[in-house]
Image (cartoon, rainbow, N blue to C red):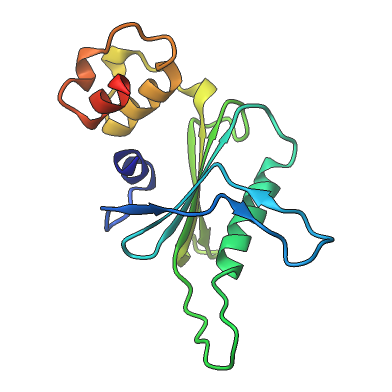
Length: 174
C-alpha cells in the first residue's frame, strides 16, 4: 500500500508508515449524511490519505470527492480559542472504473491564475482504469506496473516477470 500511495502521490517526502483510520464518519447533526470511506490512513507526518474505489459511474463524483476531502480538512478544527488553524495535508486518490476526465491520470492541485501552487497541502488524483491500456512490455514506470497489476490482477494466472523481486510480487501472491 505504501509503495502504491508513494507512486501515485509523488510527494517530495515519501510515506514510510501509515495508520489506518475509522472508515465511517458520523454526521454532526441527524439531518446530515454519514460518510463511509473506502480506505483512510494517516502517515508518519500526519498527512491524511483517502483512497476511493469507484466501480460504477456516478454523476456527481467530483462533488462527492471534494465533499469528502473538505470534511477531512474541517475535522482538524479544534475547540477553544487557542487553535492556530495550521492544517495537516489531505490527499485523495480515486481509482475509477469509469471515464471522468478522459485522462488516465489527472492530478488536481489548488493553483492561482498564474498556475502557481497556492496551497500545497491538498491534492486530488483521479485514475481512470479503463483508459490504462499499456501491455506488460510497455510499462515504463513503477506506477505503470501498479496500474497494470490493479487492472489485470483478477485475470492473471501467472505473475509477469516484470514484478519479480518487487513489492508488487508480494501483492500478487496475496
